[in-house]
Length: 339
Image 1 (cartoon, rainbow, N blue to C red):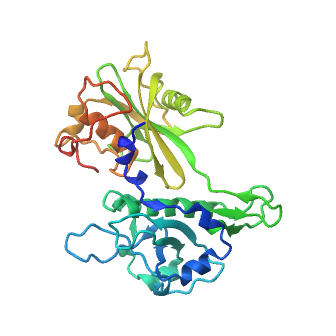
Image 2 (image 1 turned 120 degrees about the horizontal axis):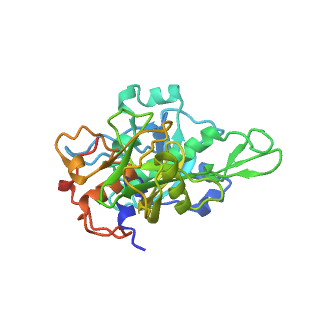
Image 3 (image 1 turned 180 degrees about the vertical axis):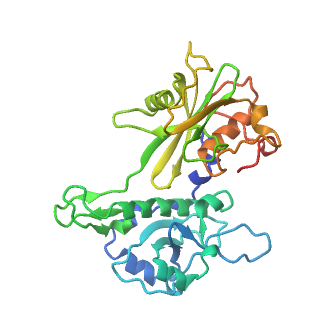
């Protein structure tokens, strides 16, 4: 299948060989710390630093440090994760550069950069960074969130040891290994017989913010079945023909968003909207004109989200074009700027 849609999803971009075989080396980090080519990505509370631009208007890039430039000495027991080797020919670092993420505490972060405003997050820079930088920051957030939420063995409760380059937690009591987990969630763009799109306002958002319906996949459930169930639970509508479009990691904290399009099932009326009242407080059908005006009063999802990519795809195609997994490139002049 084509990956044209997935290639346009900001957090699905990457340019790193994760170098799985190297993770098994017992002295991996000793070797990497002795290698002058190694570069470290410092992370503090889910944020990192940008390198100073070499030229005005230069694309933002992550600050990557050789181990000798880290202003703090990390103890041997400190958490660190081997991200792999850079594949980006256009990066400041050569192809093959080993990359490691190191989480810092408050004191360590202040030694590196005391101004909290200089630390930036993935949501703000996902669409501005290169494929390589967006990919390693997404990878880093996901794996470090997992470490912070899984410090103990799920079987016996014992504290686990970090092994395999930071990708496994081993229980010294029962000998079991715990691996990183990712929670699958479906997100769906639904259209009616007038080719309007269904958007909902979540209880945790501003009243004017709307997005696509989404929900986690339950045990024993296919993605397609989750689409049908979640839409019915949140809107009271039945949909048909879920069509897979692409997926994007969403490390806030540990999801993979699986994007679909779907249509109202036969016999369903677009007026029969029933928000669940818990997660979704309001549901509305929108035409293209209602979302592309200069002052719609509606806030759409941010440009780093797959929800926004699906909406932009729908906005960019002619109303008569059938829904498929293949779509033409988006014309940025036809879509409303991100919010």
